[in-house]
Image (cartoon, rainbow, N blue to C red; front, side, top):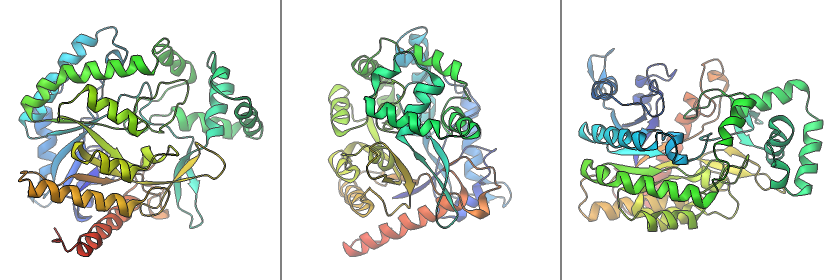
Length: 405
């Protein structure tokens, strides 16, 4: 695996020297200072590449390369196929061409309406004092019904779910209710800017009348329109699954299960349309086997987020982030599948056969609690996750009699 790390640019509290010293070779980043739908100037792309590849403090090559864009966000006009969507699609094609021309060949993106990802809890304390994030299904329903007060929301839930959410909400203090709102609506890495309930409702309203089938049509149309540009530039588009992988706030979900991936690849057969295998996102949906899904779609997987989640017994939809190696996802099986696929690509003579893999959503430990890190993106927690994944890969390669790369 290509050991990778998500970096949020020069303002990220984790420095590039920290990242390189953790054993990372491949950077996952974006031009976060540019708004969604903006043109990416060639000089901005080149500047980011120079920042990554040159260690200014040491005055030497850093040993890092920009391998994955996460993300080149897709404008809501494209998702709804309204407004200026034609202009935004043409801009997207041009940005793809410019990235490809400068050697950045993999783009991770999603097609999730309004919120890229959502959590109800950002600081769940563990027995060792570290904190992790998670989703409480009662909290999602309670926020939708009693804080957001989305019109028609009561029709989306069974009565028992409404009753359970009411009990949960009634037991929250005013401070806890505000914290729930902040957790869901405050801007998280990769999401839109901070929102308030009124603005969130306004953005959700854009999707009135757009069900899952309509959203799928918009996704497939967008991808088929940009595929010629991707193919010419040698750029792979890797869609990230829904997070969490079940409906929230009435938002259509179109990439949560194996059948969704099958439909996407059938509708967009170009090999430049691929998958970001996020084991945690797929793992949030009970019934999914992320390791088996990785095996099924291995030849179209060009980027991987390895993280683990643990389901809360008796509360379908509730889960929390867990140690990278232990949880509801069979990580040893997933790593074995990755190794086998890389060996297949190597035997086929592919010039680039390694797959970028980044540790995702590490726990927040005491030493990092005042570091200003995004939830899930602390330094030490992810370094531990990467070390665990590296050790797992070496052990599997050794057991299979393969070279330790």
